[in-house]
Image (cartoon, helix red, strand yellow):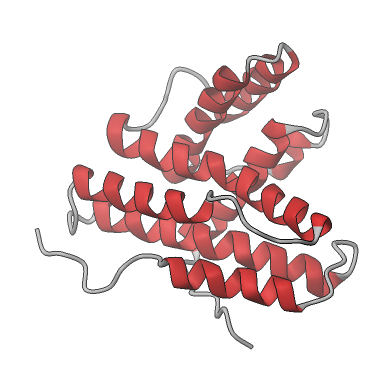
Length: 192
């Protein structure tokens, strides 16, 4: 096992994205703003995808992979200090979407692929759990679906079109970013 030459993600990188958000007029209905938020989310998903790839390739072991994921999760899910309530809410939405990305990657590395049922059935069971306000179970089931995404199962976003908007739809949105990152882990520049 050789240590990776560079870190997968840094606090500075996350802060650069937050600084950029702070400097811009953000309107989620406007295409540039929506793209900035999506790039922020995708950038983190790419870092997670790179950890998974390094683990799958044998470049790092499960312990190192889980430590790297924990480090990134700590940075990304830390409370941001925007004075602007709207921006705080938008960053919180991105963070919510990414929660399931982290849990899915951790579960994949620790336990492998969840194969008790199909990806779609995991997502629908997660939505049922959310409706019953069993949020831990909902997250666990969505993470099971996430392990299948990591394993190459196709996630079709039509899956959530009929679901009531909530945590599960946010988490699946994060898995969509992870799926894109796994298929094309191109680095997104955090500077114009």
